[in-house]
Length: 267
Image 1 (cartoon, rainbow, N blue to C red):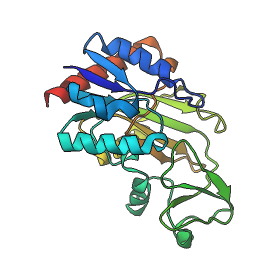
Image 2 (image 1 turned 120 degrees about the horizontal axis):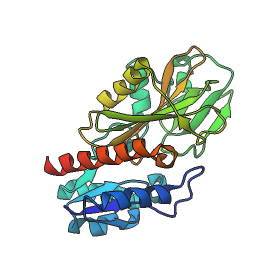
Image 3 (image 1 turned 135 degrees about the vertical axis):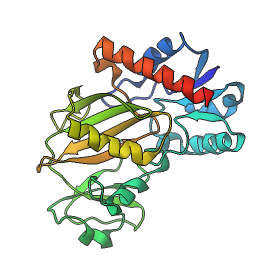
Image 4 (image 1 turned 90 degrees about the horizontal axis):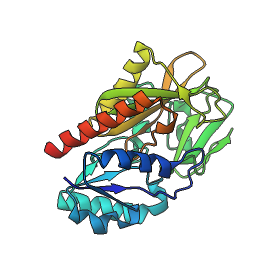
């Protein structure tokens, strides 16, 4: 079954090489599927000629929001298969999930979207404030007195975490983990060996998201108290840092992805 693989090979991601990753992935997937690559702005016009669309490293949709919204609406209207499926509850649907998870008492960095609700957050000297419809830390600011229109900003306590760690899943199967030992260098990653408790934490959010198929990245930070707190549940087009993996781990990921795609297409 032919796949339309959506990517922006020229997107200038800070600390990441989107194009290289997708060139590698498509070179390996082409052994298993006929496929063609296209830019996210062309996906809606081209998708009718393919059995499914795979959305990968296309950059933050903030930079092509109108085209993405058109593609999403057209795919839903036509019943086009999209991988990841468009029912994701994480970043695919915006940042509301951070508020929902906070309200549910799950282990997430506490988040509100109204400066009038600061009393719902831990009292700290500095807060992180960013646009609710943002990505890649665009518009992120740190301040002692958060301001902004209610419902349009995300406000979180600034946490002096020990490190950030990401857990990578295909469907509900854990693949590997990477971490950034220096908090100031988010994309200087190293292999991370998760504990059973770490994986239980990550799987909490994979289960919450209820995606039957797809690639997901659970980003977390290690708080000073030692607990992990969710930073982001990336279920739209998570960068995978495949170039940092040992060859056997990278091969295992490609095999898991191909198996997931076959199951997705057969469902």
